[in-house]
Amino acid sequence: MYQIVQRKDCDRAAWDAAADGFPAAWAWHRSEMLDARATWKRTEDFSFCVCDAANGQKIVALVPLVLVHSRSLNSLLGGHFESTGSPALDPDLPRRSVKKVQESILDTIARLARKQRIRRTDLSVAPLSPEIRSIHRPFPNPLCYFGAEDASTQTWMLRLFVEGGDEKLWEGLEHRSRKQINKAKRSGLIAEIIEPDQSLLETYYGLHLVTCSRNGIPPHRQAYFKEIFENISRQKMCKTVVVRDDNRVLTIQNFLVYKGSALYWTVASSDDALKLCANDFGMWAAIRYFRAQGVEYLECGEAFPAVHEGKQKGLNDFKKSFGGQLFPYYRGSICHRPLLEGLLGMLRHCRKGGAAT
Image 1 (spheres, rainbow, N blue to C red):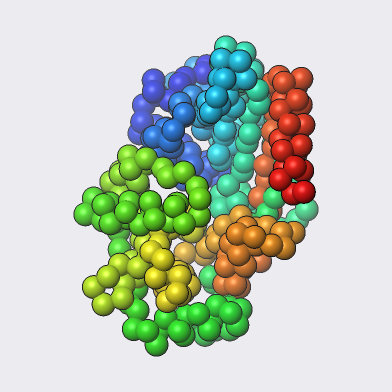
Image 2 (image 1 turned 135 degrees about the horizontal axis):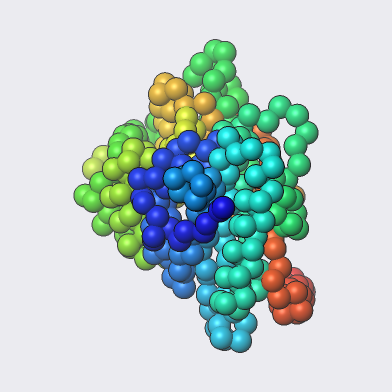
């Protein structure tokens, strides 16, 4: 018999051991990451695991799940669930048990959605999970087994194990990126790679506020980065590149590191960092460092190849310039209140259309 156990009621060590062992799991399934995600505004943690009561309450599935409340009229509109990483199952489950566990997960999400008046559940599969990285054939969206409507995109993935080492990786950079890095070198920039701690928090958060103001986006709470620089870093899951000009910090780039792979995660930069090409310089330092450390893949971030203008194009061009290849980013959505979600979708579409005219 399978039982549902909320994360808060689950043994933390057992939860993290399952995340470490399941090939479908990545850093998003770890308790430290879920603690950090719960610090976001309008967010509650509803993560749960599935345990096998007949086998000593062994964890056979992890489901990272947070409720994101609507900005307004929450009691009327309801929020939505997000499952970054999506359900991860024990690879040793007998075939006949897999479907039962999947059904148990779906029933639990549906029950929680009814109770919390949730409109939809958005799921995404970590491209860096060992299960996805091992794909060498056409592969369906794993979320199809949970009845999710496909919403997949793509990400820029750089393989660091290449013949020729740093020289070959340098040749793989686009001309724009090599030019930027050389400019940063001529300006005397210095990149230091560290395991971050609380001493860096105030500097990072100050740059974070500057970055958000420059890009017109709301900042995260400082508590989120406190989790990164404290608990996540303590577990050796974060590496930080600090780029300086003399004694001035220009940019701080955080990389999430787990299971032999790394993700370009969060970045905070001063206005001068852009002029001095500090972000390109920091990325190149990280590429060389991670290759030397035996990291196989560096995910540079979600790709937007069809966008031809605006900030999103600039972001895509930056990620692309380091020589990575497009890689599937499996996503899906389960709709719990189709009429309301359909109406809101039409309103969003009309709002975008009006903004474009």
